[in-house]
Image (tube, rainbow, N blue to C red; front, side, top):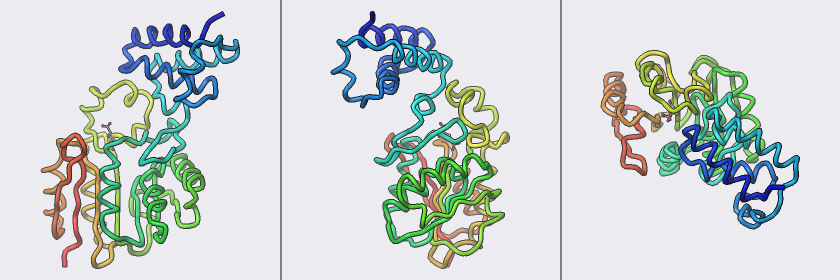
Length: 278
Ligand code: GLN
């Protein structure tokens, strides 16, 4: 028989050999999931023997992690801005950098928000959960992403204020918004060769790259968003940390008013904010 501690140690060794960046942490999270206990309680069960069905489930999860399936996909959820979101391989895994966009969005009042390329819905759902008098629309080209965003809207009690639409950017969008947000695909095609296997092999390509220079979504948004904004409306887009100058230039060239750059917690350029011109 094997104790939980022994199972985690051999799993961590296996994950380390597979090049997984944080093998001990992942072994602990996956054992917690296999045993249906809270991750914080794993230490308590560590000396105990694990039941064969849990050992089998754990082994299966570790095998998948060893081929670099992200932990969030294996456990089916990821924490974002203090809430758990349902995640599958059909949507981008919410990332901590995107919380910078949330903070900026919440720094000014808004009543109607549009989220372009909503994916898991983490941006739209978080904003509606934080601003209980607001309503909004989330669009995504992917039908499975739309289903996932809808499920997350229900999970966090904002479904009555969130409309999820399958749409190619603005195509099916109607009306005006005082806030438009997006975390679009922004990796350039050559960058896709260099990203971690977790992204390259297991996250949806259409959420990561336009297959070109990584800037197409910003050109579309800069060209069309003014027609969907109220007079005082603003746009917030997440960017790759090297894209600050390029994305600011795209918005300025498209005739936007104030265009500013905000940094993430690592001090890197991460969000471009564009104001509708007066
Ligand atoms: N932030 C992601 C990454 O580089 C890219 C996501 C995106 O293109 N929006 O890990």
